[in-house]
Length: 376
Ligand code: SF4
Image (cartoon, rainbow, N blue to C red; front, side, top):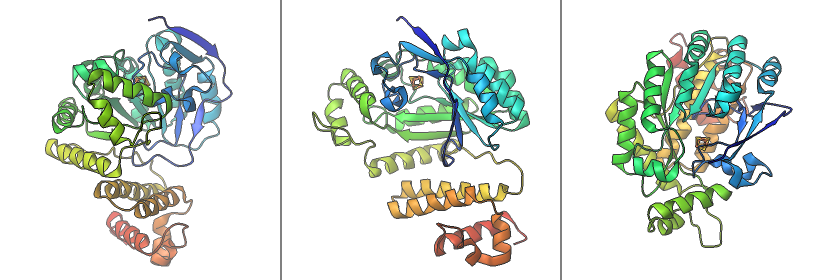
């Protein structure tokens, strides 16, 4: 397959998100040097116009746009940003072979002392292990290797050009041996053909066997061009699967699919992954990196609030409850006042002065604060 590169100079490289994406990757910033991906996974959400803009979506895996000024931009922009986790990834071959932009960006992240989170399908990442170890010694590096399953037939049908899964597992082992916090992004779990206990347990067991400490599982979302590609891959793999997929995503012929499968399906899947992770002694969430400092307690309490939103999703909690905890997590995470100081001086009523925190959540936070600080 012919691959083309198109160099350009964007004005910015860092996306600053309004909130950290707890309880998933815990990143506040994202920065990517390439647009498009040669691996061309059928289910990849980056195929959509939201990411490709006006580009022909079918060029996604044939044309790689290269942000040639990525390293300089990162150096300039990090000067003005508060220390927080940067999410990166996309160590693509052959783009990275030619331009070395990911390597350059790592050097800047190291120079400025930011913590780093990486989501990756490519073992090429291990080429920069020296720098990753240095960043990890300085602050923190968390990595997830992405794999939807270990099944070679499914891999071939849905991600024919991505690097082999065994090579990803070897990379996981290398990272774990170097002391880096590593796990699996079990995303997207392919409904109907890849979501049974056998497929899920294979990935979880392999994660454990290769030094991974956690699995982050997520269902398949369907949107725009990516949905069409994904459905086509399902029906090529198994002609009966198309109808079942249409039902799961309420997708009539000529209409549009729902973005996600029904909440009951998501919670059933999450509970099964949780059970399997417990069976194999790993976590089903990635522990958050928390920098030392006066607001570390806020970050810890926010982590617990975010994790509770996930528990509620698995338990079938109401959207009202989930959103209440999510908003409370954002408020605590972004408060400039130490939440333990508030609680010591003004008790639960002080906590309720924080927007979005009501009676039951303030009581819950008070309980957690006592657990986190035995002196309270
Ligand atoms: S490797 Fe990752 S970025 Fe590339 S197509 Fe596959 S899912 Fe998308």
